[in-house]
Image (cartoon, rainbow over all chains, first blue to last red; front, side, top):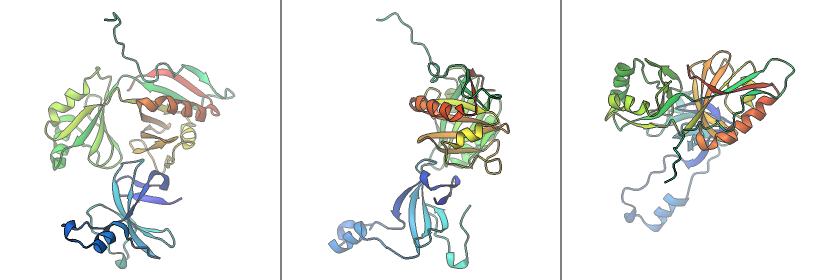
Length: 99
Length: 208
């Protein structure tokens, strides 16, 4: 089981959380101006990296808040969690997981 | 019109039989009781009023609202438990029925939304040498004394029921707030989990 550091509650077991898809998928300011291909890209197409992936999680059985998380899809190691609206931490600089 | 007056009933009044249950080989490892004389209210900061709310609460109640999962004690039996970012549960010991909301609302007007929850939650007190072992059967968080100490609070679940737990003392004693409609299932689970340690149930417990 993963131990996920909720930015509000601290480290908690995975079963308290729900996965909520890829993070930082921005909705276009004017959706009607998009082509069908661009709209489909926004709606359906997601990254599928082998390695670090920025994703949203929700602490459903805790504080109830959404937050962002950088997880390695290969090792399941969580490199960082941060609040919605915060800038993703610069992991190249060796940032540690928030505790 | 029925000439029957409505009577206020505690959530566990019909369920929590007082007495000694479970294993009887040694002293009861778990003590269970329901706190029935405490007023509860939810407090949620209004938009952009967080700093003003924290300052107002400090001057009005004598304690800062905790900004991490903790419980803080104010004057006159009032305490606040963190219940999520910018949210708290306020509690008033020995409070008169319906007394907590007006008491908070006067000081926090315009800064926070205050809603009485006294009838919406049941508060169960769990103490004793084996309380931690009993709770570990249904709760995923780490309650070890290194990780969870008196004053610490958490929003989590117990046997799939969302609960709000905080530690009272090092016995260890905990208090758990449970949504009222779930308290029957919660009590069933809790008493089953406590049975192997032997538990003593008292119907009611004063909040102090």
